[in-house]
Length: 452
Ligand SMILES: NC(=O)N[C@@H](O)C(=O)O
Ligand SMILES: [Mn+2]
Ligand SMILES: [Mn+2]
Image (cartoon, rainbow, N blue to C red; front, side, top):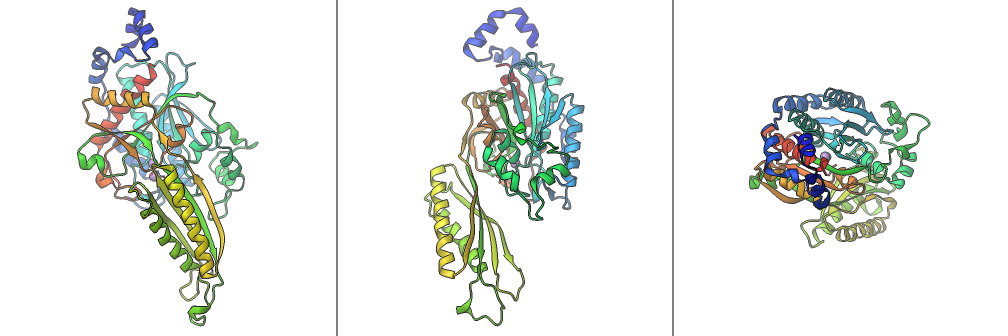
């Protein structure tokens, strides 16, 4: 369809370049391709179920942690599927996977899409995976419709969006966005088993010597656009009966690691006035996090203590050490930073009042929010309209690799409804109809962006 229009009327091309608006969004082009946008939904659901089987915990839960055997098997499955979809596949030094469909003008910066396939402990099978397998299906949909992209289309599977193994979220996309701080951090980063990041990466077949992780950095202007399809992970779309969420901004995430050290001792013999209980210090700080977040003055501020560990972890021994990991977010970066400072002051006060040592108060990440790009938002909106799917503008409270891709490319995200907004638990679910709608909107959005 495209080739024919271009050959027939060069003025269209000039008009397009001038307005930056693909005239071919004229009803005829969209109408032509709309009817032929067929999604193989059954096969897509089968792939989602198959990928969920690469898990270290029993179904319906999914646990797939970075560079573990199940992660390596899942990576092999996805690379294989990319090959079958006719994409040229490559990987970088930390295992970000790229599947490319060359466009008519392959020298132009490509348009990318993608998400992640690692899964936190005891989570579901849709978080990230819909954006990876759905992206592959979107490319297949366009191929089936006879569409020929001008700009190449590239699927990216990001390494370690989840912070599970090394406490670092969006590790792959952060590096792609050129984070020198992370580069440094990874030299000494170890997991809870004291395995270094580099050893774990090597175990999975990455970070081959001579290790140069700067090779992961994206060249400026590498992509003309990036669009991530993802489940909403919240209840709004389902509650309002809306099919498509068009993300305009991603909230600003931050995480803090805290260690307290006390004197420990016998749970029976040490009387209460003589204790320096690191466990109670941790408990008090966890409640202080909640207090500061609730007092931020906005419902948009959230705070979670998702990890709280006590040492030696014996019922009849007073905790001598405690470790907490705090996740706090807000769409207002300043307001979130104020909360973080209050949490820090509380940690110092609690340590003083309880006679324990604040051994560590480490801000692991403190990221700014990201805004979606206007032109990408317009493309997602017009795609939803063309497909006659209800849609609404909304913000993402969860973070995504898109948060970092926004630093190197015009970014947008497409949300689909999920059951009761459940996520990060086995009950996470999106209907194949909702996934199919998301895939169609993604396909059409990629087509429009690839013509620009
Ligand atoms: N999308 C998503 O779940 N990202 C998470 O890693 C998060 O904690 O937001
Ligand atoms: Mn997640
Ligand atoms: Mn995700």
